[in-house]
Amino acid sequence: MRLYGQDIRSRLLIGTALYPSPAVMEQALRASGAEIVTVSLRREAAGGKAGAAFWGIVSALGAKVLPNTAGCRTVRDAVTTAQMARELFGTPWIKLEVIGDDETLQPDVVGLVEAAEILIRDGFEVFPYCTDDLTVVSRLLDVGCQVVMPWAAPIGTGKGLVNPYALRTLRARFPEVPMIIDAGLGAPSHAAQALEMGFDAVLLNTAIAKAGNPVAMARAFRLAVEAGRTAYEAGLMPPRDLASPSTPVVGTPFWHAAAP
Amino acid sequence: MQPKKRVTVVGAGIAGTWQALLFAKAGYEVTLLESGDPSLAQAAAYWAGGMVAPDCEAETAEPVVVRLGRRSLDLWRSYLPEMPVTGSLVVAHARDRADFERFARLTSGHERVGAQRLGELEPALAGRFRDALFFPNEAHVEPRRVLRLLHRQLEAAGATIRFGTTADPRRLDGTVIDCRGLAARDVFPDLRGVRGEVALLETQEVALSRPVRLIHPRWPIYVVPRPGGRFLVGATSIESEDAGPVTVRSALELLTAAYSLHPGFGEARVLELGAGLRPAFPDHAPRIRIDGERIAVNGLYRHGFLLAPALAELTLAYVQNGTRNEEVMGWS
Image (cartoon, rainbow over all chains, first blue to last red; front, side, top):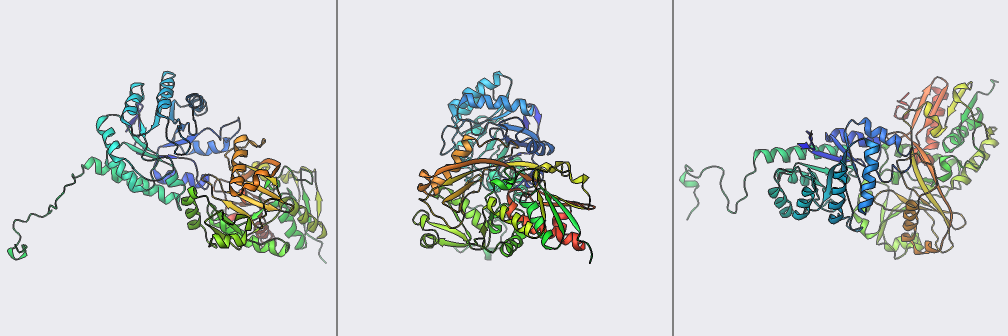
């Protein structure tokens, strides 16, 4: 998988929030095999010395950092946060979130396109968190995004792929664009499903961080992502309406044949 | 008769106070040194909730924390028999139902109570929640008052307490127990501060007889009743070593949580808003590091009142007869 010119082997990206402790976070990250971690900047980084110890732990993980603009509600907010993140982490990567509704945390897709355009002009490599709307994705690509991150379901709901039809349409319409399913995944089977559909990767946080055993759950997601991707590459059989025996009926001894 | 063996404890927060107390009661000649004044306003304990809640903490804490916490509860009971052991309650608003069920699944020692029983336990909460988790075997103390009480017990046992005395444990002779919290980074390079913010409220409109935890998607928010119609609402948990005053956002979250628990908190007075840094290791479990006669106890994180007595007992057992508890001393 190639994201803004960088080759990434792991198709699982994970967040760094909500773990019981940094030690558990570190073990979960290792178990997941993820090469990219997202970090939220908004709260922890306010002020100079804030969070230095925690950043130390995150950077010691050796993973690529994808800072995000979680919690930003306006274009200006998101742009400022992205600039702070670039300075702090020394990366042009930014997972762009502009929240449009407090109850559902639904992305403000209009603001998202506007912010993406500003940031790309400023030299950022933008990973926009968007809905599964085809036109929105098309606009994001128009302004220069080379990766998009459509949601499976609203953040933190764990509902899985609530609109597979829209996601399938997206995948079919933009087969060459790296697409990472972000938000709403609750179970490893959801991740497998996304990969089977041909999406390039998944990003999740809560499903691992708040599992009874986050480290074991991280491993479960890693296996599911590998299974899903392998299945996609192997080529899934198309579903059909009528039963079709895997053993030819021809040659079945006549006394086994059903009575007319 | 042998002369009494001397022990110096550095740091009079909750960890150091318990160390000093158990050593003094065991017959050692104890000196407790504290850089701050007797108010202990700079100690993490000053802003603590003061809950001794091993069962609830099992939600996120390592098993060793829960085990030590259960032992601490016994020690609190024997040294402070007047401590209220009224249990604690966990409630959730309808939209956080999934997190409530998760909390129930990850903890033990609770019973699920319906609306009626909840109303009997806490009349103020009658009709406000469909059900709750009741943890009967948990206790709570008022940290500032209890620290004073323990210091008095300590002096009655013959120990000396010196406030306003900054000491470097490496320059002290004899057995030294270093309980300096975040100041002990020279001994523990991987110690970090985790910011916690609390609000102290006062109202006569709400009465609670036990701590109530409100399920919150990010932090365990609790309301702990204090004598005189006071309530401590805490606590945020932020990866920051900024010990500055409470932010607007945190104040909003804490006060909203209290108000959503009971509208009577709408008219409560805000007596204090405060922030402190909890000393924590990456696994959020405590450590006792042994280096000859110098012993360092640290990383009590959010669990100072839950862990301090049991850790003191482990240190005492080590000094008296060399018993090592590898779970907390394995780092030495």
